[in-house]
Image: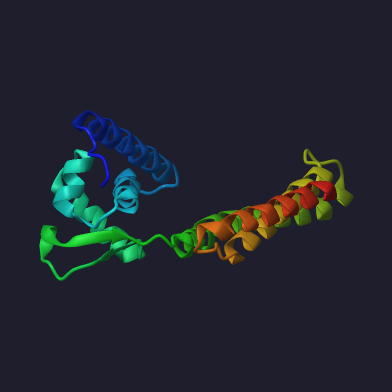
Length: 192
């Protein structure tokens, strides 16, 4: 028989879990999403059982309407799923733990575009500066443009590699992947 958890221990644990949810929410907001997405997903991910929207709102101390909107957006991203056939806020939800496809999509659709825009701009500027060199002295250093272009291309190659990765579903295989990633980073440092 398992010992009973005291009310004090439960309150302290609940408070710490909400702090974890808030931290993930802040990170998600830094990425340009809504903090509530990270908070709701994390609460579902850490809970030992499926939660309704009403229970999520109570645990997180937010309005049911805020949770409802977040649940529908998270479902559209494929990050939560309905686990019963309940209606409205009485439906139980669970977190989808395989978040890598969503992260990969974000990296491809946002970061890749930003890096490609920078690479194209650097390439065009370098070409123009090299063409203009024969006409006299310019205010811009083509060697530095080449360095920035090379750095951008390296960042793009690393981003491509990251997007191409498939994070293992099982935590015991994650350590192996991290060891391989560390070895790759050491090898890349040796090239510079």
